[in-house]
Length: 548
Image (cartoon, rainbow, N blue to C red):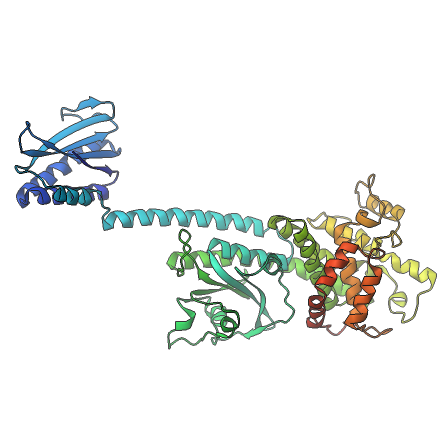
């Protein structure tokens, strides 16, 4: 009667199997000395058979002796090579060594046999622990490899806002978290730059710049603030923070949304000079297999810190790219007071949101969305960089431009594209498309002309043999998006030569220009979410213009 198969690969597994054989003999005949003798013989057998370092399979069975009532315990060991000096007999399964031990002289009741089988088959605490540790090692290795792969991907992202969205999305995925947020250090405070949870739609998960900025002091009154100072804060349950902790959890958001914050980890992200860049917060991890609520265990904490370090390196690099973009804009602002940092941020944010609405209709993959947002955002910010080459007398003229002044002003599109001459970058195409085409019109009446576009592209070393007329879908999608965002911001803003238009007036203007100035599909999408775009405009305020 077959009882169990014991697979032995390590000394620890051999020790566990020995205890099982010992318990089996006690259950069968109750003789401790006999049980110890059989267990010892079993150990010698396994040691001898497994001396070549291979795996050993022990087949345990109970057999009737000579047709009588006496039963013997059979231990058949199978190994990958022939054991020496044991009189092994060969079978189709490998090398077998039979060891018979008197188990009992009486009939064994089925209930007792069931207990014996359960003893042999049921995994011991040591086996379960070993399996769990092996799984953890495998999981840890897989997660570490995943993080290293992400580090490479993060390094390819140019735009800071797109990077922050990607960092949070990947962090939540790696650690199976319901929610998370990123706070960036700005002027000695922490500013919420991005937050997402399972209920967030695709746009909310990918967009960073919120309409109403929320700031938090860098002190130990909050988990994020404490992490900014102490590098790491881990909480098992935000509702049961120990009384000795300096920080408390504000339940206001949970009460308003029905969300239940449990486990939280907050980790500082620091630059190569150890300066605080921001804080990554992850909330409510779940078990990867069952999806049940979990905690941030010690290995999780180490991995989150590792992840934050990788993210910080990418954020530092993208921040440098953003700084270079803003310096170019600052140069343009010296010429044109309208070209402010707030203006280009609003244009970039509106264009990004409108792009996501457009992409959602086309079911673009999340990878495509990230890639295109990464190109669109900085390109939108640089849409008028060519104004550095326009005379100040034209840029600052309060009244209507003369025809020759108008022609000179229109040159900023081509000047902006020419700033790309020289070293190639990953976002050249998007910047070129936006700077060159953002004043093209859907009906073909904008500028520059087809011939001027072809000439400029050839100056840049770009094949212009198949460039379409700048009308309709011949205008790159990035430029069509920025055209709406740019005009919207201009109409909503006060200028030296005009007052700001009311939202109702702006809405009517876009309805009027649908299909002539602007892509009609984009106008429809824009007006569907018009109130949100108005909120964005009101939240990103103009700063004082620089002086030359």
